[in-house]
Length: 220
Image 1 (cartoon, helix red, strand yellow):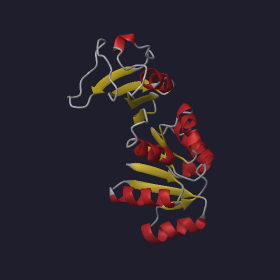
Image 2 (cartoon, one colour):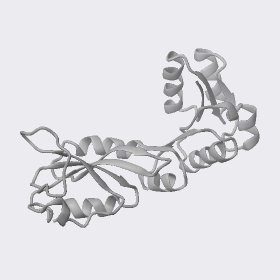
Image 3 (cartoon, one colour):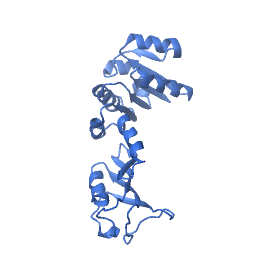
Image 4 (cartoon, helix red, strand yellow):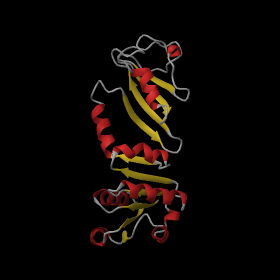
């Protein structure tokens, strides 16, 4: 698989090494000649100097045949622009962008980046998995469809406790797919399923309905 990485910092460098070990064809683009020399010394001719936001540079790099395009610089604006050019100008099927400011993650999703990755949010979600008061955890984002698989915990005092599924005002584009209850096997909830405190619900929802789903299931 041919993969292009924009940004030769620590993230781009380690991604490149890992992908090369797996047998992929990888090319890194970076504006800094010194970084390109470092790649040359250790990994061979896998890095060229250039601006990954420029159409001419991407054309020279052969981005039109890339299957995956990764923007991993420390500038969100550059990552967003580079992915959009790769996606819309060259038709790259899969774009992945590093999101340095977690506030920008939703913006990247709205603007069509297939897989925006906020390291800050990923770390927080791993921490929050251990915190019983946190009601919603992201499990999977399907960027092209703008769909999310989430886990919602029914907290003590939530207004949904003691209600059946049919009594809830769920967003129309949200589906409750699985109920996980302590001491029992996971089950598919039905309209008559009554929710209890500490139940965990695996749901499919859209990015736009996530907040409304969380409010209906886990608000006090």
